[in-house]
Image (tube, rainbow, N blue to C red; front, side, top):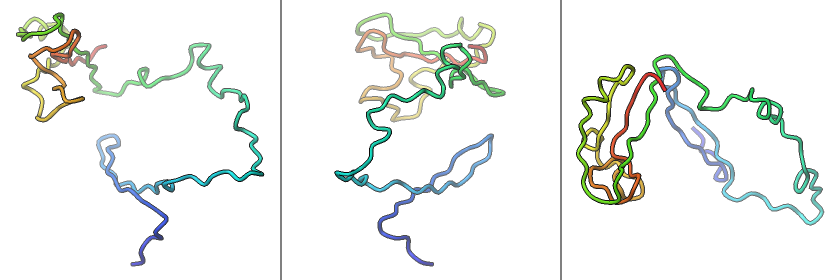
Length: 141
């Protein structure tokens, strides 16, 4: 087996596609792009170009990620703290009775460490207003 040239970099990852795992090998771009020479003809840089998706966007026909649904897909919404600081207690029993609600996740339901910026993703100990304290998962949006 021959080694890849030193100037080429590759990354191998597994991706899930419709329940199947596939191994993908992707060549990464060089670490530094080659600089343009002093005589480079810049036909695109600095020019106004037509947007290929403009018509779909302005007519409301564009499809965004939020518009895509898959069979069995769940939707989630954070429950945010109504207080500035303190400890909250949650009674999720009423939420679980709402049609379409599958689960309400709380801090103790998440694996550790589950942190974003040093703060637990969900926490009963609130340190700022609007901090996520739970996540409601439902089969309807």
